[in-house]
Length: 144
Ligand SMILES: [Zn+2]
Image (tube, rainbow, N blue to C red):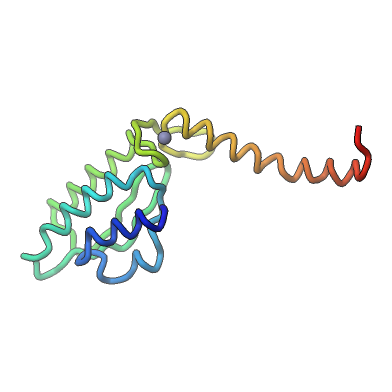
């Protein structure tokens, strides 16, 4: 997640992010889920002032193509809101936030078609890089 988006998210949850875990480890998913996360963080944060045992966010990440939000001191209402946010990620492109689908071509990611195509092409380019390098070494200065 881009730094400005992470900063926006952290600013929305001064109580629930106060343990510094997220500042240290970051938000390990892409920018398309910012809207889902902001909505969740606003809900969770709004309930903390009346609680003695305050909710603490431990980790936010993508796993098997969907959002995972780990926290401590979670009430049943918090747990429900977290489940709703995680479920929303299954229909939301992790890159751009547009409607998406869970894709599985060895990697599981939730993406819209344009973002998925771009991601596959980036991966293919990376995969080709060593082969191109080997061919360049083989050809040397020879230009066919
Ligand atoms: Zn997308």
